[in-house]
Image (cartoon, rainbow, N blue to C red; front, side, top):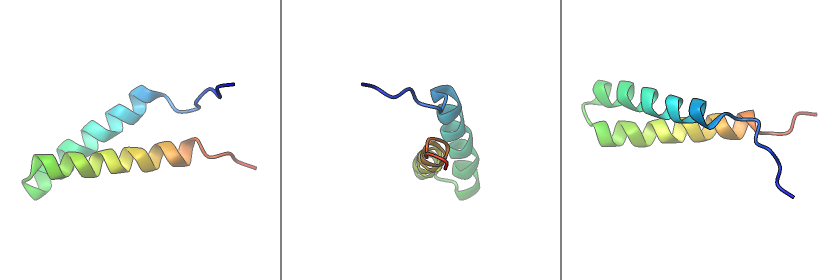
Length: 53
């Protein structure tokens, strides 16, 4: 039984890329900024897919 995700993967990807590019430009290291963007996207997915009581 698979549970359908409540999170649109396009939104998660967009958040990762956009925040990664912005943070990468701010700290002048694109790879590290993209890593932070992926972590922000992961947090978004975890919060959005959490079961609310």
